Each structure stands twice: as structure tokens, then as C-alpha cells.
Image 1 (cartoon, rainbow, N blue to C red):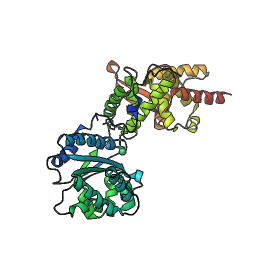
Image 2 (image 1 turned 120 degrees about the vertical axis):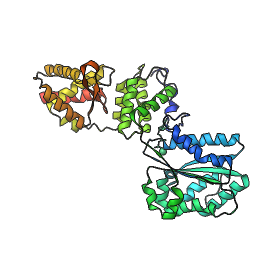
Image 3 (image 1 turned 180 degrees about the vertical axis):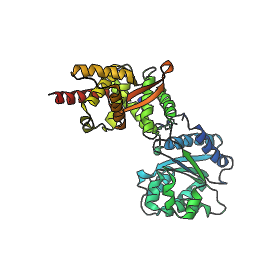
Image 4 (image 1 turned 30 degrees about the vertical axis):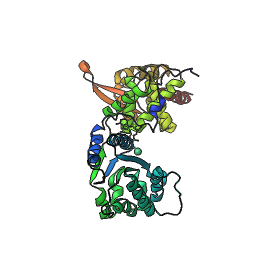
Length: 394
Ligand SMILES: Nc1ncnc2c1ncn2[C@@H]1O[C@H](COP(=O)(O)OP(=O)(O)O)[C@@H](O)[C@H]1O
Ligand SMILES: [Mg+2]
């Protein structure tokens, strides 16, 4: 057991619930949200707002709205406005409007009884409470799909219409609905749909470079200086990019990779730690995939595995890989196959998603093919292949 963490400065910054102060590449959306609510800050009670935030898993929907919630609460307090941001994950309340509203009202009346009221009564009571306290609520319904699935149009209708019909009363309840895409909205009836659809903020999938920026930012919060190499970050960004630009996946990988480095008492989080991390997340590298490879594909892959196990690199050039393959052939006393055949093996390994190939502009040497191992630890791969090859030899 290491006596102190060599790697982590503050692991909690990689926690799934941590809301970073800065959200790289989401400032435009954050400003847009602020703009939508600026009227509410200037003229509290005159108008309530309805916003929808859409985007894929890990595109930052939850983080964005919670960051916004903290920012606007601070801004409102400065102006003496009693604003409360409440974030509920509808799935956690099994999509039940009653349970969601019960949670909201409990913010104002702790220990509010769970029996004896309907959802509609809870909503009326909530609005009454807000009137009495001159308070405003921004209610975020995260994983909104779950509410629509369970309650359909009815729930949304209640949430949006009930306060509209309260004549001459202030508009105190604003909604932010978070959902992956607008498909679920199509289930709702036309009038409910139209009350929701006015302001939509769609979060595009992150690019690899954006993921690199996000990861770098998190690295500086969570890790000691110079413990995570640029190559490791690049590899993790690549992996989360291939998972649909999923920043959550990237941050989880970063944490796990750090854990591997810590457990092995390393000074840095090497690319191999990230590969170990990803192969622990999904053991997609099924052994049957490997056993189906031809002997020379196995030898080629073994050469790659040995290269990555020894070096701290993320990429190997085709030329270097070919040399390492020749060494492996010698060891197993087989004649190396031709350059053209090796090229085909590489394509096959890439199609199987075992390796990734990309071409880079290699300066004076023209285009160079670079090979990386994505989802498996080089060490594991080497062990597996050596065992398979020895069996075949016997
Ligand atoms: N732009 C960003 N900057 C920093 N961290 C981000 C950013 N976008 C997402 N994250 C982080 O990635 C993870 C997933 O984001 P989250 O908001 O939960 O995604 P979603 O709700 O869209 O599935 C969280 O840990 C979040 O803090
Ligand atoms: Mg979310």
C-alpha cells in the first residue's frame, strides 16, 4: 500500500456528482440560459420560463443546468430575489409527478406528509407557498423522458397550465426539462407540446479536441502536476469520442486510470493505465475474437502488444510494427509474411476494433500510418496471445 497518493490531488473532483466551476465549450449555452432568465431577474413574477435542454449521454446536460442553477441563484440573491433552483432526476422518482412534487414541496416544508394529497393539490400548495414567501422556483426535470413515459401529457399540462390560469398572481414556477432528444415530446398532445417547445438548447456531441480540453481541465483539479501525460489524455479523449463524445465516460476512465497508476505505485498515469481502465469497463475484447485470428495476425498483434507494454507511447508506426512483427516471427520460427499481407491483417484487426489506425502527415516522410491499441491493456493482450500461440505450437 502506498503511504500517500502520488497521483491524485483531489479525487472528489472526478466524482460523478461534482459540478465543475468552469464548463469548457459550454459557455455559449450557459450564457443562453442566463439570457432566457434575465427577464425573470429584472421583473420577478412577470413571466415564467420554459426551456428544454437536449443532447446525448455525457454531453453535459446535467452539469450545464446545475452550473446555471448555482450561478443564477447567486445572481438573484445579490438582487434580493428569493430564488430557489431545484434539480430533480425524474427517473429517481420513478417518473411520478406526485413524488417529484412532494420532493419540491419538502424543500419548503420539511417532513411534509406523503399521504392525503393528489399531485394537483401538491402543485397548488407549492404555488401558494411561493406566493406567501415571495419566492421563485426554477425546477429542473432531469431525465424528463421518465416523467412523460409514466404520466404522459397530463403531468406536463398540469405543470404548465395551472399557474397560467391563476389570474393576477405572480408567475413563480419556471421549468427546465432535460431530455436526450425530442422524440419523447412527440407523444404529447399538440397543445402541451407547443407550451414546451419554444426554447430549446441542443448540446452537440463533443469533438475529440473539446474532450481533451475538458479532461485537461479536470486533470488540473484532480491530479498532482505532471502526473497525467498528454498522450494518456489524448487516448482517453479518443475513447470517449468513440463513445459518442461522452464526457462522463472520459472522466470515469481518467479516474480509473489514476486508480491503476496508484495501485501500482507509479509516478504517472501512463497510457497502459488507461487501456487497463477501459478493458475493465467493458470486457469487449472477448477471448473468442482473439482465438479466431490467424497465426500471423496473432503474431502481429503480439508484436504490437509488446511494443506498447514496453513504451509509454500511444501510437506505433506501421514500419516499427513491421519490425517488431519480424522479431516475433523469428522467435516462433516462422517465415514473416509480406508487407502487403501484413497490411491486410492490420485492416482486419482494425475492422474488429482491436486496433485503431489513422494516417498522419509525417513531415518529410509523407503520410505515415499510426496504430494504437484502444480498448485493451497491452499486458493482458500479450498474456492472452502468448498462451494462444503456444497452444498452437504444441
Ligand atoms: N463542458 C464540460 N466541462 C467540464 N465537465 C463536463 C463538461 N461536460 C460534461 N462534463 C462532465 O462530464 C460528466 C457528464 O456530464 P453530464 O452533465 O452528467 O452529462 P449528461 O447529463 O448530458 O449525460 C460530468 O461529470 C460532467 O461534470
Ligand atoms: Mg444527465
